[in-house]
Amino acid sequence: EADIYQTPRYLVIGTGKKITLECSQTMGHDKMYWYQQDPGMELHLIHYSYGVNSTEKGDLSSESTVSRIRTEHFPLTLESARPSHTSQYLCASASPISTEAFFGQGTRLTVV
Amino acid sequence: SQKIEQNSEALNIQEGKTATLTCNYTNYSPAYLQWYRQDPGRGPVFLLLIRENEKEKRKERLKVTFDTTLKQSLFHITASQPADSATYLCALATSRGGNTPLVFGKGTRLSVIA
Image (spheres, helix red, strand yellow):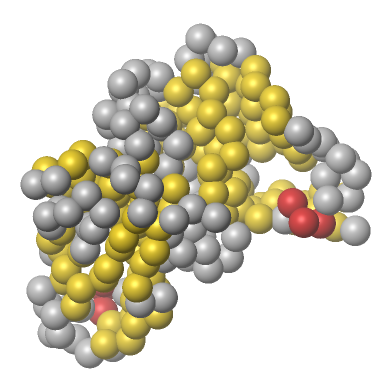
């Protein structure tokens, strides 16, 4: 089992709410990623980071933001949730010398 | 445009047979290609990596081939078991230094029938 944790596992919130999805890893990995995945569909990269104070946007346009203040922590924030944000959000990390990505269990978000 | 295609959404095979999954890509020059397994409601789990200068990689009952001329990777599971039932994803990275994020295909859902 990889040492990467996402909370919460499931979240149902109302439209317009601000939410933060948490992701932490204990492997000391510099590289961390957020992917969004709808059922039966491919993973879409929404944000990534190669170290503290480094963040980049991915291919999928998203109204979310991320921060990387500590190596082990990479939270994703939605300032104003919309029903179109309903999806599964997957966090992953990788070491500088390895290309293998370790994924968390995911957060399934439903915006009503 | 860049595209990764996995041959079919679903594949059903009998227990004991070899499952073969295909990953084709266009407009990429991948430095390496990876295969992951994903179970329902869980994050993907890494299985195998093959580099652009490698033709074949094996790990237990798994085998991956990589043909950069055909722009294709084949993923084989020999002596398949019902426990192998899952979605299998291929992923590409274009940077040799590993400094570009992985791009994933949609996956093939494999069902192994006892």
